[in-house]
Length: 182
Ligand code: GTP
Ligand code: MG
Image (cartoon, rainbow, N blue to C red):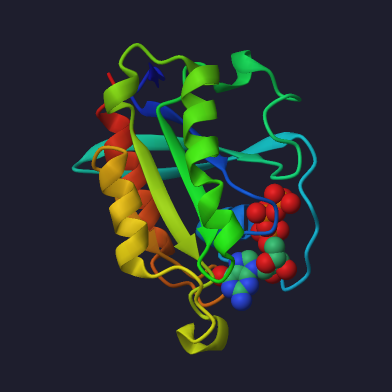
């Protein structure tokens, strides 16, 4: 964590997950209050910032969006180092995007190489819960929570970037767990 002159905490957050799960959409919803149906694959990595207050503390989230297609090769481990939180995203309607979570999780830890990998803060988002009113779900909430328990107590949120469901709450939780890494 870094601090500006006003001791505003600057928290580096990395968002990972398979292509098309809604990483960019969640960030655009959270920061710009916008949603687009159109899919435009992210190339490389880019960040947006969001200022918020957590328990009377001024916090700036620096949220790094990544490309689900590119895996880890292209960015290099320097990109991941110094992260304060890793947000993993999957699509509750696509089983494959859930099955790859362990790989994203483990590979992140390998690249970021935090001092205490066993307590490094992750948050899991199960996105697109709006689709079909939940009738096309491929992963149950129970199954997702079991995975979170198996990796230490990872907070879990079911979200919809489209309907703006749980997005603010999810990123507030991200800020809270990220603040614990000092
Ligand atoms: P990459 O950049 O390739 O890694 O993909 P991404 O994870 O950034 O996915 P993106 O945000 O571009 O979303 C992919 C598609 O899913 C787009 O067409 C979005 O409109 C759509 N989408 C994203 N979130 C939601 C959601 O919550 N509900 C629904 N119905 N569609 C969504
Ligand atoms: Mg994207």
